[in-house]
Each structure stands twice: as C-alpha cells, then as structure tokens.
Length: 98
Image (tube, rainbow, N blue to C red; front, side, top):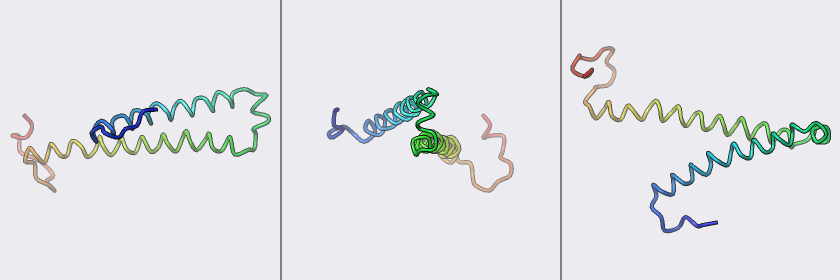
C-alpha cells in the first residue's frame, strides 16, 4: 500500500474519495453475497453480522447521498453569488438569465 505523504491536498482528497467510493460497495456486496447463501445465512441469522451488513450498506450510502445533495445544492450558489445575484429576492432581472 502506498503512503499519501508528499502529494498535494487535492490529489489526496481525490484518491481518498475514490477509494471510499470503490471500497464501500465492494464490502457491502461481498457481505451481501455471503448472506445470499442460504446455508450460511441460517448460521448467521440473528447475529451481529447481519446487523453490521445492513448498517454498513445503508448508513454509508446515506452519508454519500447527503454529501452529494449538499454539494449539488450549495456549490452552484457560489457561482450565482459571483455573478452578482443578491440574496432574498423572489425574482431576478432578466439580465441574469443569459
């Protein structure tokens, strides 16, 4: 495994995000495949393995959905502010639509 010491912050954040985006569905999928086997599922039924799989898949998925929603909502507002659109207006002049 390669250390991320010595690379710039943007690249480190990119690789951290890429690793998480790949690792979470992979681990969730592998644990789901194990639970899909009925003979193993009988043994693992009512254990913390099922609870961990459920919360790992749904909780981490919800965190990514929240992060995506926040970025899709608030990131464009930076550009609107840089374009000069003021706050708390119910309607804007037509000059901002072009």
